[in-house]
Amino acid sequence: MQLVFLLFLIAIVGTMWGRTRFLKIYGQESSNLISSRITGAELAEAILRKRGVEGISIAKGEGLLPDFYDPGTRRLTLAPQHFGGSSFSALALAALQAGKAIQQHEDHKPLLWRNSAVRASIYLTPPLFVIGLFTLLIGMSKTLLPIVVLGWALVTFWNFLTVPTEVDAGLRAKRQLDEMRVFRNLDERIGVERVIGAASTANIDGFSLVASWLARAFLPWMKEKAE
Image (cartoon, rainbow, N blue to C red; front, side, top):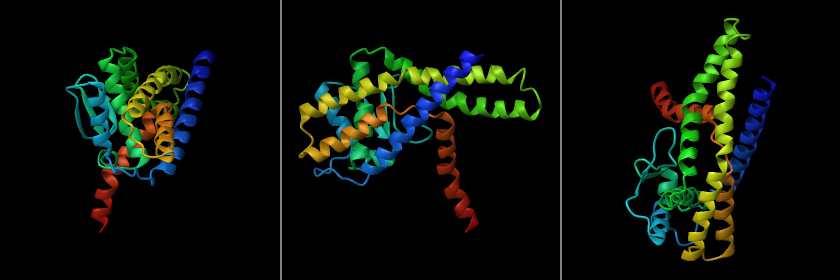
């Protein structure tokens, strides 16, 4: 059981570090706009066209994963602010998802492992957290809690282990950007690549992702009702 807690601790610390670093860099570059005013959707399309990747649909994302590439449906979705935005952060997130489509085009199998890890983190982490709290409340921490922690540790560590696939997608996207000569100055290139690098090493935190989605979905409605 000590090994389970160790794996869980490593994955949690790695997740916190990657997520914090990403949010910091994302915030720093989100107000900087590329001079060409190309949007995230346009950049993703241009990257795929340059690499010769066909049959990929690009759409505005909604729900838990607004920025996501689904290998099964060959659909690339971007959050509204990234789909139509021209900030360094918007372009970086679009390029990273395009890099995943390139991975599939080049038959990079770990993409499927990463996809399964992301889905597991999102859909299993919140229920495991709730079950863990419930076991503490009903006084069954010695019997059920270790099982819950084991499940949570496996999901979190699997997510942690598949992060190199994100890094690889970012590198593929950067190579295409270099060939396309999208950037007109060094500041644009450094800014976009900073966000790509930070996003590539940011683990998916399923619990906070679900919480933020619920806030986005219900806070406007609650505010409207209050008014």
